Length: 313
Image 1 (tube, one colour):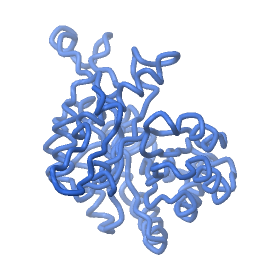
Image 2 (cartoon, helix red, strand yellow):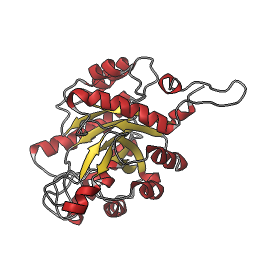
Image 3 (cartoon, rainbow, N blue to C red):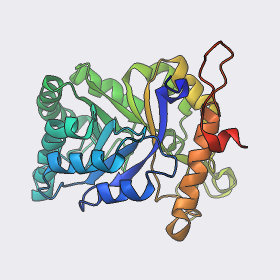
Image 4 (cartoon, rainbow, N blue to C red):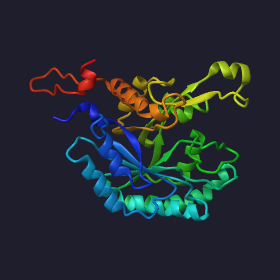
């Protein structure tokens, strides 16, 4: 019997731009991750994604690990050479997602640089209406990451999908059912937004979740505000930030979410560099415990498994 907790899997992101995704999967596949999100930064560098997908699945082998989502992060709305590579990368990921076993491609919407968020909507509609149709023809969903990349309502370089008011505007422009969100609580806490009500309101549009958190430094805000010299918030690995992941996962379950929470590392100010995987393994254990720990179903012949590391605690 399949572990019923794994309707929500806990995994991690892995860099794919340099072609090392399959190698990285092979290195960490036995560490307890249940899913992987290979991701590209701005460009696929012309890689053969069908071949890369095969190598990633071969690296997984017969382990109970999935790849539900590919990441493609860049600005496909502008027209500089790298922007054009990003747009082509989206097309290539959509066309080749099935080679990874993935049904979702996620990343930034892009943005008309230096303009207000509403000023990007015509170009957003032009690009994403076409990509949504392309994805729908292949049974693929598109999920927009909710990171502002230091942008705001007035200006920015990368992404307009960072604010719930923007989501209302975007999904009015593109009502396609296969367009949604790659959501995480971190980017909402960074802007002092309560994440939990968003799950309740936007659950039907949450296609993928990133495991990333934040610590709001209220002592800094009270003394220096949010525009001073001292950083008022840190991005954190789950388990080290402010979010109650038991509540987050409970709300996701209540809303019917089935998919992966893939840890997004490389941001924690403490658990980074030589402590990166220490932090990620702590996050993996934390998220599995928040998901319910080990499975115990009291019925004849019922599943009695679960994660051995959790069961041993």
